Image 1 (cartoon, rainbow, N blue to C red):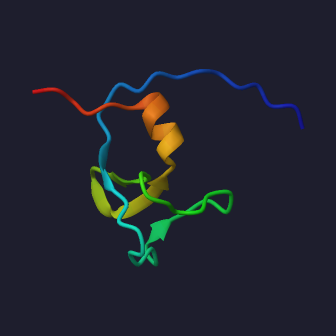
Image 2 (image 1 turned 180 degrees about the vertical axis):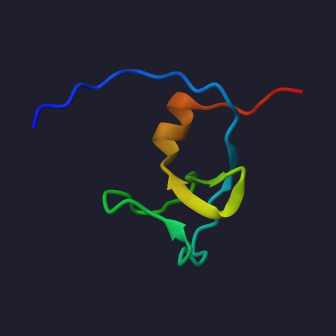
Length: 69
């Protein structure tokens, strides 16, 4: 199948916290391509904090920054 990819800009904020090396990731989605490491972040659905996933450090640094007050 041939898919057409489009670019979308985020219009909301993401809630995240640092990954703590060695923490239990039982209820956090981790892609098979990722291996949790220091510097990664844990993101959550702001409307459901039980929905969490790992965000690789490299992706985070290239695409996100902390909101300034």
